[in-house]
Image (tube, rainbow, N blue to C red; front, top):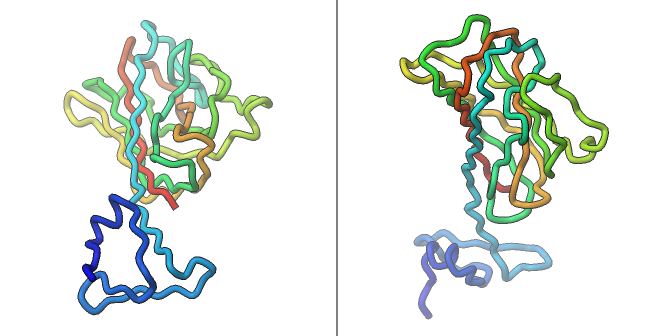
Length: 195
């Protein structure tokens, strides 16, 4: 009898019997209702949402939404399956060569389904119709000037939730009052694992 390689199990979903040696003398035994099934998942995901803010320099108040007039953030295909997840990290890149005076941290409100659009420069709002889809908020650190680019890296977030589809939705808002640069591109990336 040949012993399947671990990569074959991951790729094909082969079921292996309890006690089958996978790595030399290492065996797997289960005492469950599905004693002959071992489920191995390597669910890790990365999804990016990007937008160009409007062609204006209207100052933001603390708590204002930073986005477009027509859409919130959509993180497509966060994981391949509908399941529980953990957001482990999040980055934000702003395509600008200088940190605007007063810019601070940001908030990212996460939703399990497409939420009501809140236009750029409007007040952050958990709309009554979206309450059941609201999963929580992640705080982002103040972006750092890296020459031609501003960057905010946020590790060890450990934000838990459950996917309804393979997408997540979000609203970005500012913590501070600042005057933005017109037509600046913002790119937010989330890193997830399935649980």
